[in-house]
Length: 194
Image 1: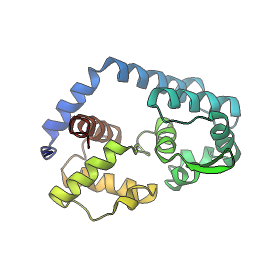
Image 2: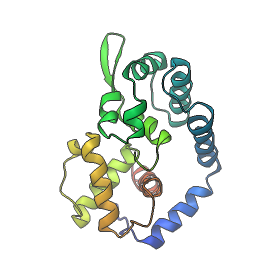
Image 3: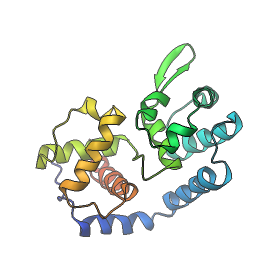
Image 4: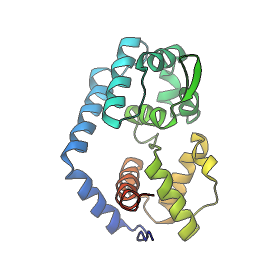
């Protein structure tokens, strides 16, 4: 039986301290920030996009077996202005990619790609974040939503914001709330094989 304490500022701060002590993840995030923010922030040239897609795929194990198709898809979209404006629908638009004649949906990857350009506009979706939001929806009734709502980025972000508001975590950035959700979810749901 999973029993996760209701999040408080103190609990989130403890998780963030734990996060900052995980050298592997801290170094990966620094590398990605350097890549996305300083070295190749643009999204016009496929070369710039491909190196970012490849780095994210490697560090996050996103299981993209054809990084070129994903990079080509992003390059064809002209995402600079929507990305800069924080348009949430962009994640839904980047997600479907034709690979080997089939449409594959790389939703978690798309949220990570946008988040690494603008972490305060785009929280990351992944299975641990999903499990945590559903867990606290059921335990504390902080919001009404379905699992399908979490797979639509325009609905996902407001749910993360409601989570933050409901537990008085608005002093934390979206990136910090995301780190809390991911690390706590990984600890609890991995431990119980959920």
